[in-house]
Picture: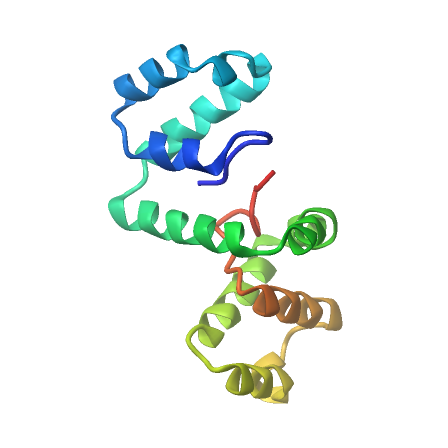
Amino acid sequence: MPAGQNVPPQWMERLQKLPPAEQERFMTNNERFRNLPPEQKAQIRERLREFHQLSPEERQKLRERANVWEKIPPEQRQRVRQEILPRWKQMSPDRREEIKHRLNALNGLSEQDRAAKLRDPNFVRGLDSSEQDMLRNLSNLRVTPATGAVGDHQ
């Protein structure tokens, strides 16, 4: 689960492992959390609530994506937030699904095989140039978007 702005990733990781009552106790007793703006506190609580409604498999996938996100250099994260995510959100759901489907086909391939696949006209057939660019960008980041977005990371 992505950490909120100015919230240590360890918080979210730790809180995800706690039952809701213990999460609330942690947040109530943590000075840094208490000093966050009300809207940020509400956002964190909402993300934790949503997290607990996921299946164990969905939770694991979300944790894996968060771990990948944390490993991406800050300048690349900024590029995702400022360039890639806005373009991703403008795409229709069916086009996003098409790109995610192709990203999944690239998972587990070596750099060389992935690059060859991205150059293969049959693999990118049906994608316009901006979608092909999005596929390359996401493949290079090794970020597989969640259902709604590349990453709602702040």
